[in-house]
Image 1 (cartoon, rainbow, N blue to C red):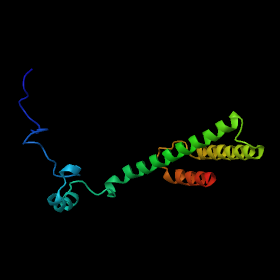
Image 2 (cartoon, rainbow, N blue to C red):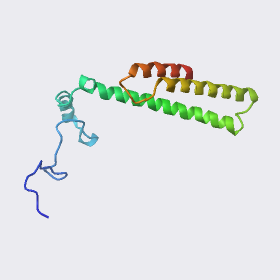
Image 3 (cartoon, helix red, strand yellow):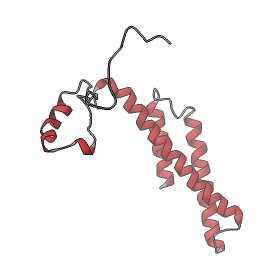
Image 4 (tube, one colour):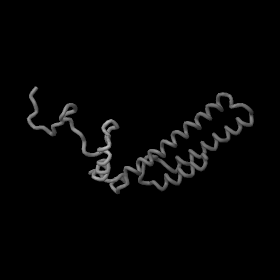
Length: 142
């Protein structure tokens, strides 16, 4: 094989000519007392804008939505465990079984209401519809 003639960048991964990044976080073993003074420069002189900059609004909204969907999935898993306990023969007394059954029925109704209002949970364009429906679902769960 022929060696490439043009080089994008010449970096070494080990040895005396190893590439050390100018921006970003340093590893723990690299931090010394002299590096803590220049740590402020690493944070302020970064070429990237702050995380709450307007260019990241769409990404931040999507990340918040993913966290909401994660909470929805975890809550659904918890209520599915309750449904499994009910099907397996209950959790003890008849009154406790009736209470668990009632909780499961209320949660199922709340989920039907939620999904009748929200067709796509990852669509951040219609965020007010999702926010209202998700808030109502969380109130029902609490």
